[in-house]
Structures are given as C-alpha cells and as structure tokens.
Length: 240
Length: 391
Ligand SMILES: Nc1ncnc2c1ncn2[C@@H]1O[C@H](COP(=O)(O)OP(=O)(O)OP(=O)(O)O)[C@@H](O)[C@H]1O
Ligand SMILES: [Mg+2]
Image 1: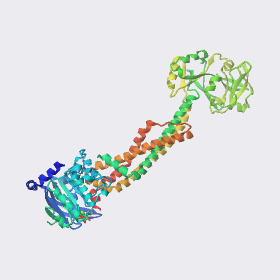
Image 2: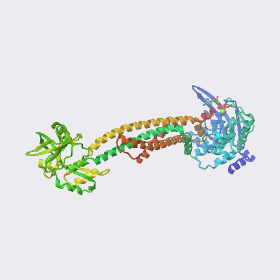
Image 3: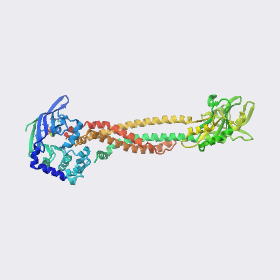
Image 4: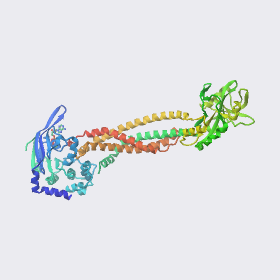
C-alpha cells in the first residue's frame, strides 16, 4: 500500500513527470476501423493518429457515434483495428497474437466503463481481485491497497447492489488499477453519476495519472478540463 | 480466490437453475446404478442358487461318448464300453485338497432296461444324496426309500409315467436280460424339463443288480459348496486323484439362465445410456442458457484479463461439478431404487456396490464436460468489445 502511494507521489513530482513525458507511451498510427453490417461496410475510424505520453491524462470528446468507444477498445486491445497499428512502449500490439495479447493486456491496461460492469454476485473485494485471479497471482495484498486507494477499504465485503453508483465506480477503478497497469482507459466513467460524484471520480483519476497514463472519454467539457489535453473526435477523425 | 472458487460461487448462486441439469444427471446415473446393481445381484443370485442346488461337477470315465436319445428326450450321453467307476474307490475323492468344499458326492448308474416291452433309461441313485442334490423336484407321491428288504421303490419321470399311466403305488416290473425285479412306484417327478423326465429312477443297489453291475457306478455328481467356488480347480484335483476319470464342471444350465439375464441387462443398460445421452443434452442446454445469461459477465471477465482457456476451463469445471453432484446423488438413489426393486424383479436383495461409485461419477463428469462443449464455444464467441458496449 505505502509502496504504491510512494510511487504515485514520486511520479507526481514535477521533475519525474517531465522526464516521463518525454516518452510516447501510446502511438496510434493511421488506424481505421470498419464494421461489417450485412453486406455494407461502415468505416467508423478513418485513419486516426494519436500520441499519448507516459503519465499523461488525456480526455477524448466527440459526438455520440464519433468512434470514441471504438478507439478506446482498440487501444485497450479488446478490439483490433482494420488497418494501421498501435504501438505501446514501441511494441506493435497489432502484430501480437490473441494469446500473446491476453497477458500483455492484463498487465498493461485497466478498463473503467460507464456502466461500472462489476460482477453482481461478487463482493467489492472479489471484483477487485478478478484480474489477479486471471493472471494467476496468488498475492492478494494489492486488492486491499487498491481499495484503500479509492477510499473503500471499509466496504470491501459488500456486493455491488449494496453500494452507491459512485462507490461502484470506485470499486471498478480499484479493479482497473489492481495490476498496476501503465494505462487506464475510462469510457465515460461519470456518465451514470451525478455531477458531484462525477467530479469526485475525476479527481480520483487525476490523482492516478502521472504514474499511469489515463485516457478518459467524456461528454462533459467541464470535467475534461481536469485533463492535461483534450482530443476531439469528429466523424472518425482527430480534430485536436 | 482462485478460478474454481469463482465457479463454485457462481454455481451456488444459480442453484435452482442448475438444479434441472443436476437432476437429469441424477436420473441417468440412478438408472445405470440401479441396472448394474440389480443385475449383478441377479447374476450373483444365480450362481449362488446353482451352488446351492444341483451338481457342479460330473465325474465319469474318460471315454468317448455317444449321445443317447430316448424317444424325443435327449438324455445326454452315455459311456460306451465297460468303463465304470468302482464304487469302492469313491471315498478317495475326499483326499483332495478342497475336500471341505465337497458337500455331496452322489453316485449314479445309468443303463437301459425293459419296461412293458419297451426300453427305458434307468438311473440308479443314492436316494438320500439325490434328494439333497435335487431339492426342487416336485414328487407326486413320495421320495423313494433306499432299498428295503420287503419291496423296491422307484420314481419315474413324467414322460414315462404319462403314457404308461403310472402313479404312486403302481406296480412295475423292470427286466434286463434274464434278471427282473418287481417294484412299486413311490412317486412321479413333475416335469422339470430336464433329463429326469425320461428316466426311471431306482436305488443304486437295485440298479446294479438289474444291470449286473455290482460295485460299479457310471458317474459321480459332485456338489461343491462355497462362495465363488474354484470349481475348475476342484475338478482338476479330482482328476488328479482319479487318473482315467474326467471331472467336468456343469455350468451350462447356469450359463443359459445367465444369457437371459444378460440379455435383459443389456436392454436395460441401453435404456440407461439413452437416458445419459438425454441428460447430456439437458446439461448442455441448461449451461447454454446460463452462458447466454452471463454474456456480459463473460465479457467483463475477458476485459479484466480472462483468457479463452480460462473461460473454457471455468465452464468445463462447472460441467464437471454438475457431473460430480449428479453422479453422487444418482448413485445413492439408484442403489436405494435397486434395493426396493430387485427383490421384486429378480428376488434378490442387492447390497450397495461401492466399487462402481468412482466409475459412475467418472462417467457423469465426462457427461458434464461433454455437455460443456457447446456452451464453451458460445462463450468463446463473446466479443467483450461488443457485449460491454451495449448498456
Ligand atoms: N459492432 C458494430 N457493428 C457495426 N457498427 C458498430 C459496431 N460497434 C459500433 N458501431 C458503430 O460505430 C460507430 C461508433 O461507435 P462508438 O461506440 O465508438 O461511438 P461513441 O463515440 O463511443 O458513441 P457514444 O458517445 O454514444 O458512446 C457508431 O456509429 C456505431 O453505430
Ligand atoms: Mg461510447
């Protein structure tokens, strides 16, 4: 726990931050995505180029249907681009096999969704422990420190239905960071929350940025202001 | 927390839904266990019965034999030539190593005699010993006594008694060459379907006199008494003691009945296996339904790091658990069912066959895992990007 905070603190230190910012952690190169709808092909992303530095906190904004979720899924390796490539730490993940990707993704990215997507039958603790279960990690100490980090150590034996929306989203954030990934992807993390709770979640994400690269999709320009940079997507193109 | 505890949690949450799948495995397992238990008890019972009644081993001179037919009734085979066993040597049989298993040694003398101008097969026996060998014979009249000075008693098979109108108390005269004896019918043996239907049975000494074979017998019928008798071994020991005699175990009757039992068993087993196939489908459809319900959860697990292999092994584990529970309960129910049904069906009381428990549970586990294949394919088709996108 303290280790974790320390790393967070040291990396929030401006000196380290600038050093980290030198490196491009994520490089999206000419990414297109086409979906097949019956006989029609729909191109959702038209050659996206985007670079995100280590420790950066980037907001992505854009109209509904502009391809934000699609881009997030591609960066997060849940989906593959039709063309183009994604480099993470200079490793081209589009060249990796499905099997190789599983472990790489486990250790590299954490996801936070608008709908929290917790498993209802599992307690907060168990939900946070899931990534460790799948990675075969037997040391569960990271679970408690992650829950402490989001301020929910005292609710860890509660099931999602017994938690408020904001609390559920904090559990989801704890689950996303429990493996200490380099990248945190949050797709409209405040979309299902009221304004106050929403800004609380954003400050939490902001406090995680630095050690982690945070990319957040939001429709709320006020919340987007918290980030280091805002990227606009318009009809599948970047309009920064 | 481990992968399998995740599955166990999930199973306990969906108890009622999975109940149907478990129930179908229970039914199949119970059917199989009931069939196996009942029929193995029936088979055991048959052997036991064959041990209790009738001879297990026939000892006779080692000669070429010819089949002998009296009327339409086959009476087996009869030794040719002058090969007989000396009555005085019979006690030597008790020097074999398994002597303690020899319950009855009954001497027999076969021959042909004239009765009312026709030839009949006569069998000389020791009435006391024969009675213990053939407890199932129903006699109209009474069992003949051993030779008594006043009168000679004989028993006749139903195929002979019928045409000649013989019944208890009828006087008959048997002759062979120029020897003849007057006797009285003590009783008629109700048809057994066996060779004795065509025999006239008389005390050994009388038959020896009639056939001029004093001190000789044609064969010995030996009843070995023990569970799981090493009949072949006893036969071998007898042959060792009596060079020139052959001892043959007589399991043919049992084998015929066994064939009937086995035929019935295989029909019952076929039905059970169909039940098992049906239960595989039930488990598969239940699990498929549960996978469909959990598409989102599967997507979440994929998104937080579950590999294809982990998703599949979770489902296989779930299938196996259904199999274990179903197999265990099925074993208990099948055992209980057979202990109720078997006494009525095959008049034996079976005891639980613990030795088949592992195999039964094993089969059920395989059933559960086979049933998981289609649900697993469905789960692998889950695109996390897609299921998590839909709100
Ligand atoms: N599996 C799919 N098949 C076909 N079209 C799809 C599929 N997934 C997404 N789309 C289409 O791709 C486009 C971009 O979708 P995406 O979800 O990325 O938009 P978004 O910017 O996240 O929108 P929102 O703000 O509403 O979440 C939409 O027009 C959508 O209908
Ligand atoms: Mg979206």
